[in-house]
Length: 300
Image 1 (cartoon, rainbow, N blue to C red):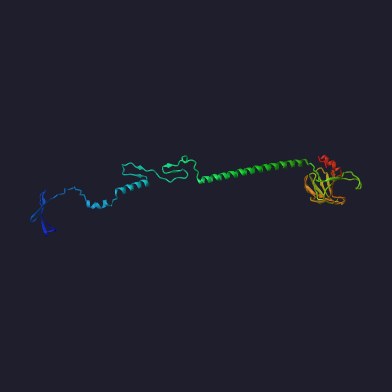
Image 2 (image 1 turned 60 degrees about the horizontal axis):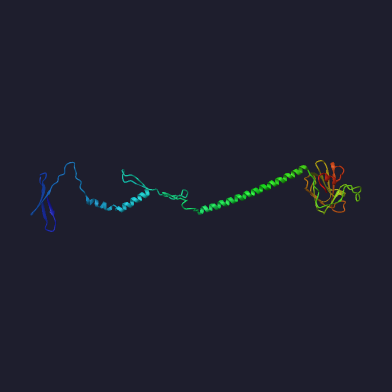
């Protein structure tokens, strides 16, 4: 074998002479230089590993430094919560971080203790308290009005019941107010024979009311009686209202004691405005109205 060598001097040619012995060496000769290099023979089935430092150097230089690796590991712990070095290394559970809950008051691995903070009230709590107070006031006011309404209705019912009882008794009332008596039943003087009724003098237009529950059986003008309204009671007794200025009911109307039926006037044969009242039991001859009123608890 020949090898050309270049260097500072002239080109030299080295001649290699291999040996056939097992431990022989390869001899390089060059005029005055002889180099012997032992030969290493590879054994069948075995291969000796050779470190290749130059090939791995770039890969090692590409790896991050130790502090960077530690920072990446810490970030992995904070995100994933676990780090496993290998199958034989225990798994480390990192604390779980969660957002604070408005309902539970928990944040991370600790909880908020409201007792440690004292009587702290949020703005929403104060607003809710004000709303609750307003609602309570409205409820109280509604309850008060309901009680007043119930009281008023109870009074109305009581008054209606009392009035119904009076109606059931069919008690009589005076036919008008603000009067004076000017002529009684049986008087003589201005009349052809005797006076058949009781006269109540009062200003024109004074309201006239039904003395008892009755049915209106006649309404109209009747000669010397002037404008006349006849009320017939349940027992058939007739009440005659004479010399009226106005009449506000019609035949067939049902009236109750105290209901307005007309007003005082001076129609017919009169000397001034007044009510001429006659009471005719069973639609027969007239009787003394004064006595009839007294029988029904009235003093004219």
